[in-house]
Image (cartoon, rainbow, N blue to C red):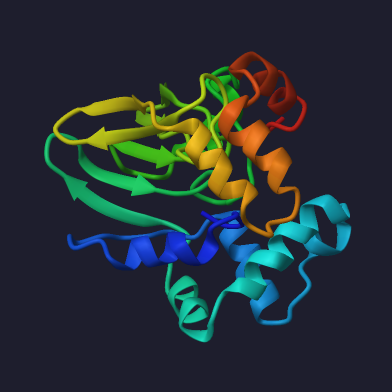
Amino acid sequence: MLPGPMTRETLACLREVDIPVQFILGNGDREVLARMRGMETGWYHAAAEQWRAPVRWSAEQLRMEDEKLLASWPATARLKIQGLGEVMFCHGTPRSDTEIFTRLTPEERLLPIFEGVKVSTVLCGHTHLQFDRTIGGARVVNAGSVGMPFGEPGAYWLLLGPEVELRYTRYDLAKAAERIRATKYPQAEDFAMRNVLQPPSEEEMLGAFSRAELK
């Protein structure tokens, strides 16, 4: 979820959800939380300023109650879902919120990570690319991304139970870009163009991730 140009607004929306809900912490959320606490992680120390600035800005927008909310989110969660059994939710992989893999990553590289999970389905994110594949005995699904997609502009998400349904929703892209440009978010114009109006293609990102994926 974090960092992002409408940090406070997004958290407000999450708080207003009136059904039982479980959140998990992603690497961006973790970095923002660390900045709120005055901590400098290894990633923040090594990252270029263009990546650090959004994290710092997002941390400055939040309040103490926001810090408590983020700190309450676990790294992984397990839920029983009708038709699917026990499902594990994680950001990157079950052991790390930064490990990268895609629908093209060879299965033998991933087996040591997923063999011991002992669930029917694993839901992950991190790369923002939707896929539905099998690794060992587990079905591994990536939900994609609503706010920072790769591929056709729009919102990528999924519905679980009793099946796994990968979903895609169009919305008013121009209005969303206008709202982002109206914020003081660092690189707001670039965010509006590259993450809303004209995101990179799936092929482009698969090539980029292949250089950083698990070896």
